[in-house]
Length: 336
Image 1 (cartoon, helix red, strand yellow):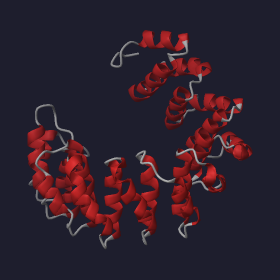
Image 2 (tube, rainbow, N blue to C red):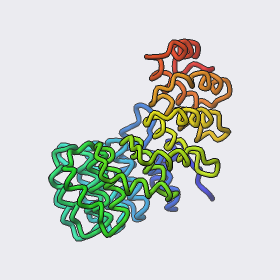
Image 3 (cartoon, rainbow, N blue to C red):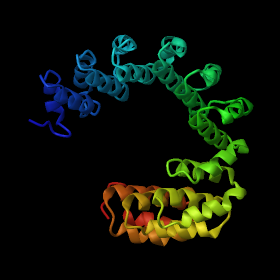
């Protein structure tokens, strides 16, 4: 018997004690979203699943405990730090940072010297969630012997706004692991530092990294990469999401071609392209594209309508047309 993709809440509570692990795994995910007033039942079920014999069930339970902010779960999460299943150990560390940020530091910080690299990695991400208080500890991890840990340190410092010494980060641009160097380049770009721009320009030719590279170069307003960004934005054979990121960079460089490309992507038959382009129309305040958003409203799903509404809310400060369109579609739960 195959379990439902998303069991009902009551079914998930029953499946906490199901004999087959796949039912308990489904339950662990579902209990993170209890109906109003039933949070305590969900918490009880998750605490039980956190001690499940199946490692994947435990990992999912720890993750859901963090999402649900389950009170009084610190003890079971601390036990999870020594779980025999590595993903469960990592999930326990992240969950503790979510449910008890004030008290989590003392338990998580020692993991930065743990012999297991996945625990050092998880500790870095958890501490970066706790803010700039741990900037020095995160900086020290830039010298970790494991490239994945150095990668987390480079990314975490920019992602959480932790003030990183740019000179210290820049030393890792030549890291033996190219992924670390690229992560440093993107973090430096987020800090407005152009020293990683050459790596980002090279990455425009890598399908796996072109999106991130284009975003970073756009943030830097890197005019040297203009030609490559223009070719990427106009390429019909590339990913529409990458094309949109390149078009964003062109707009930031003052090239009208960027707005033209985004206008085409807003009309794309691919929903993910339309939605991302719509987000960028709002971010970049491209009021000339409000009529395109109006056309999409006539034939879009509820999810796409929400994306359009968010863009219009940003555009409304400078566009009377956007304000009128927002007024015409009513509140968020109003059908179009």
